[in-house]
Amino acid sequence: MAEQDSMVEISTDRVRIDHAYCYDVIANSYWGGGRTRGEFDKSVEMSVPVGAYCDGKQVGFARVVSDLIAIAYVADVFVDPDYRRRGIAAKMIDALHAHPDLARVKRWLLATHDMQPLYRQHGYEDLDDLMMMRVDEGAKARKPLR
Image (cartoon, rainbow, N blue to C red; front, side):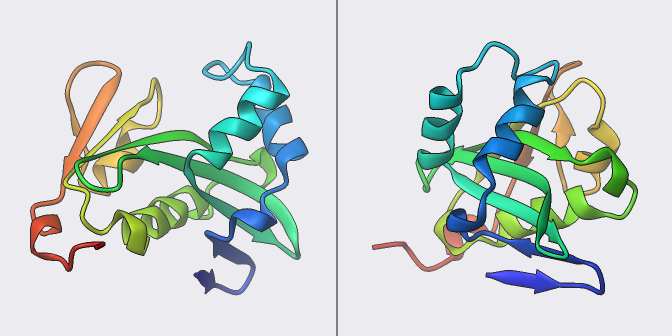
């Protein structure tokens, strides 16, 4: 799955993820410090990832941890500082919400200290100062995975 706009491509192709770049950003973030590279690689392997690319270079990343049925947790969302304010994070979230493997997920959770306005635009509501949740009432009506 890929979405093209004039400058940025959003892709859920896990093979395209630049693990070294993403690990460097996340290891230096307020939320991801302390993870080893091996732990990061395993977290991507066990998730549904999405990347944002400009001229073939990765400029954003996000992933979802899920059982693919009842619950999904959005994690490790970032956009390179040079590419912010272009709607890239919003496009990555849209791509994850539209991912066919996640179509039946009803409850989506995430934690953020500073990006609540972005997630509210995507149907997330505050649970407290940190946690947010989106309930997809249409999930149950979608075709089962099996």
